Image (cartoon, rainbow, N blue to C red; front, side, top):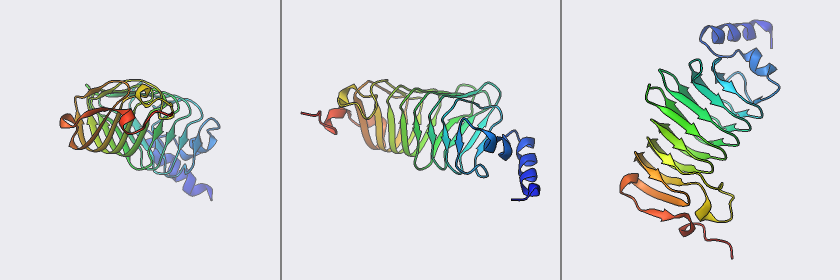
Length: 205
């Protein structure tokens, strides 16, 4: 690698509000598996132990995005905290594999994600949405203005004490789901049954 391409990449990124490739390489507290494909806003506040896979893009305005520790952002993750929107992410969460987007790009959009949350699949999360500790969204889901209650993680031996879960495919709008509950939908989550998670994951004997 000669200095000229790196210098060009750094100048272009800095001019558009992203951390430079040199800054990502020099970050000893987080891991960027491909610093040349990851775009991280200079305004993003991030903790330590986070892993960023290739082709992650994170856009933020000043004071709008807070990322905690030990999160894993798989390839294709997209986060927007712009135009008055805000995003807060806790600790030990998984975003992906597959394309996960957190879209807080309106003034009334506040996305809050707790700890040990999993978003796996083609997930779009938008609006005023809160994902409590241990909650999950799995599949091909667009979720807007949802509130998933906190609970244990997917590793908790009692499934009915785990955080709330949306899974399947379709659109979930304006839903509130309690601890230990799951909606498994194909289409409109609002018309699908609310079930106990033990229906799918029996308690150990």
